[in-house]
Length: 303
Ligand code: CP
Ligand code: NVA
Image 1 (spheres, protein in one colour):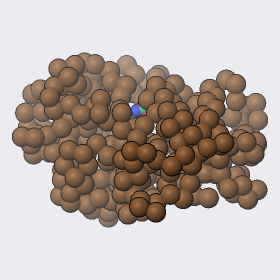
Image 2: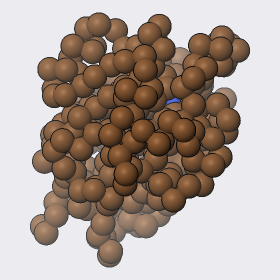
Image 3: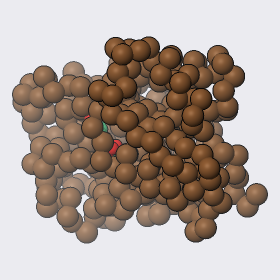
Image 4: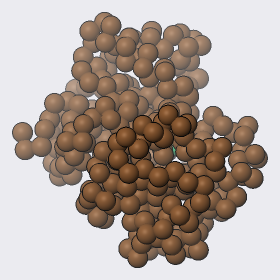
């Protein structure tokens, strides 16, 4: 059984298949008589609701658990949690503070030969389910066209990473504007550039200039709350507002994975502007989760 821990755990063609499956109007009930275990070490609105809804739509039972009641690596090891959940569920989804926990859970499942897929519902490192929804949203507006310019303004974080990799896999141009101390490491920037056209800058206007998509996310991610005051100072000038948007392409859309911190990384005016695709993007979280579980269950488009 495959796991989905990073967006590039799927090939370009497989991502396109997941997106196509996401659009199935009457999907097969591949999770009938099955359950899916969803563990959340951090808060979630979209990921939990979209996953649970998608599982229900595929005929399955979602079983969601929050941090305190599971206690990964405190009440018992990540490996023991994964092996136990694998004895009940067809898939395990987990939102974790430390990405390595997901890797350990996947290895533990594999080590006992369980045919159970582990899905990353966000870690400190990446957010691949979000990237699928982002690609679905970009696809619905522009098609996944080579040369489309996607600008990310804000922290170089888990969302930035998965989005950038996914867009580069589709042949798009990526420009990331972060204050220099929040850039990806040199080796990671080189790895992005080896995939395609990736520009890293400290100038939001440069990144946004002529962009088809302008994307932002919170300056302080879950787990970084102690840095919040420092980050508000460091990210001054990185707010996606109407003035910054005036540099984007004429038909540019605005995206945000949400939750948004109004007045920090984005203004309410931009969130509610005609260019905003954020609510469609949030709904796409559910559609792509359906597509992902269909794909991981072996369903292929037109099969
Ligand atoms: N975008 C996203 O993952 O939202 P939640 O944190 O609410 O799940
Ligand atoms: N970067 C944010 C994304 C929330 C969906 C975080 O990790 O908190």
